[in-house]
Length: 79
Image (cartoon, rainbow, N blue to C red):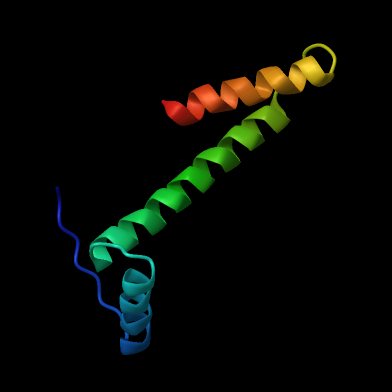
């Protein structure tokens, strides 16, 4: 695993340490990794939404359409 050092003012460092304690993270690094993973997931979702919004609509938007969309998202999320 690669190493990256960051500098934080005391107030942010204290906040990170509180979050580690309150949420049972094993370390500040694990807390920061989790934040980055969450942002990464949000960015991927934004891109998927924009791709969908910019794509041509195919067929009717009925309950079957939305169930198929949910299934595609589940498969994508698990990969």
